[in-house]
Length: 60
Length: 436
Image 1 (cartoon, each protein chain N blue to C red):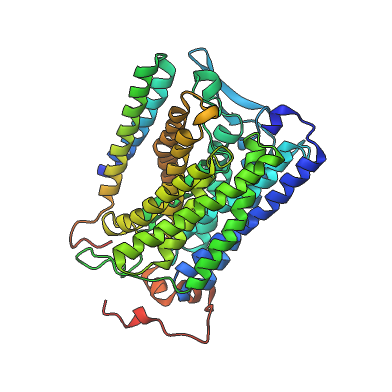
Image 2: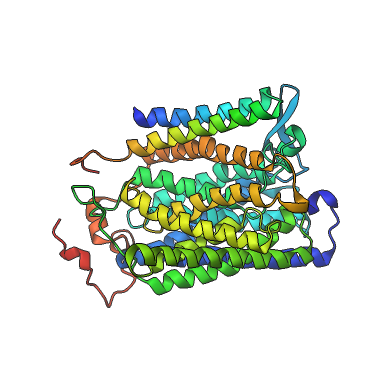
């Protein structure tokens, strides 16, 4: 489940970046939304990494 | 870009570009030898054979289908209009290069370069999933990469796609900048490598029941360093040809490309050596080698546009990032990547792309918004390419299991898959004596 949420966050962050490019023309809001999208991607990546770390004693 | 400047490139320029392209196979060979050296001795022949298969499969798949989606700037492509702005998302070319003039034109030179480049991209995951990835799935995964993942992203960057047009459409610098394949080749390959490591899991015996990593050293460090030196020659050709085809460099501009490529790799390797000396008490040859490759990768993003001092700075930071991320990924994130491919290709490439946005826009070449264009490209790699390549390989793994059986892993990939070892005179493997 955590893995799926992580990958969905990766995609959501990318869509936010694209939306910022398309919908915002002023420089500052566009930059802020691109950075926000990127931050969501980092969060998603962290979740996917966490999902692949086995619990103590769990076999891989 | 020479393709847009004139379709009639002087023959001397075309010949020089072709000579540079012909150096690129040395990068592929270098990575193959590096992969061989960093793996176990009982999988050495398998690693080399897998490299050869991957190069062959990727070249055929790219020429047959991949280039149809990748295309070249100025040629036919599918464009969708969003908010009145054109988004060029995929090329529209015939399969098997039908109708393409193979005569030394920029588009034909681009085909040759990318036939080799896709081999580099497909080679990178081999490095990460060595010693437990079966040969059949290796070929299948390389086919998927060469037919879809690589061409799609390469079209966006090198084929006149939407990332290349960020400057024209949204006023972001010159658009996403990557002349030597830091993103198209190395980040795509490195992120696929990360997906593969997640899918196949760590080698048996790599982590103790408490989760502590066990060192499994590469079997031939001479091959590792020799592979790095071969890759250097290949990267000089790759960065030069890329700068001419995708970065508007003239033949005289290649002097800077050669200097920057070498400086970046040298600085990165030396700082990786120093970092490992400080961390472990002695320099680590395999991490230093990864630093060298990471420096080459980072240089690819904008080597023709950096000043030599900036190239050294980029290399220094790359060396630190690669050395620390190899350790961090293995120790804290349980990523068993025997070749350090995720660090040397994905991490170094992403840093190189960001550095291109910061340093390539300095001084007289300053263009506003370049760093944002780079950030959009990096966000596309992490937010789109990574889930896509993971999803494709995950689905393929359900059909054709990637990982070798545990008996096969213990026996060794050479004997299990090929029926013969690489070094029949030496059959002693120290880890066979470890208590499991």
